Image (cartoon, rainbow over all chains, first blue to last red):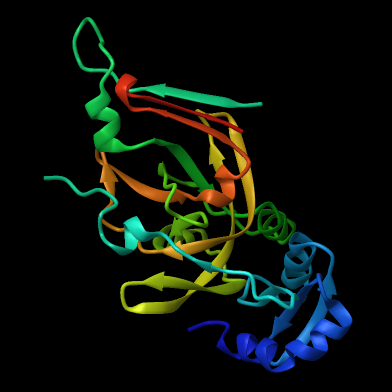
Length: 83
Length: 159
């Protein structure tokens, strides 16, 4: 799966990233931090400039990992259930 | 504030409201999934072709926490992932990829540039012969007024 290396890097360095970049969007490619940005869009534009249209990780640095997502109708296969 | 009203009607000269039509199709409207503006600019600056928008239905899904886009559609647009998110499934939590995307709702008259949407498999989800390619989740609805008038076969979305 793409971004496994980047996600691992983020998890391993989260504590230090929090110290320097809490609330910002970090850009990670491979096992390297490429920058920190105020907005997600700025991070995306920087990622395109640095790496081209390739997978890279953009993550907001925050203590509380905000979310998991749910879409139960699709998961349960009842998005369009008919009798 | 753009307002999208849609009323399902029964066939025939009277064109009576169709609660069953809304019930069967759900609150759907036409959508075009496009590459994000930043990627369009990036490709344009390099003289590369910008992939054509992908059309289909967007279904408002009040059960979805985040907006989801069909993964085949994202692949056709050539957009690359920028994140992951844990999603709840019957088999437990799994990681899904996040992609930046721009959604254009031509009939409703508004566009949304997403920092990220969740890529999901919407194959086989069709309404009136067209594919459902987007589930509009509560991240969008958080900024909208949605009225679902089942007995009148109509819904309104104001953004």
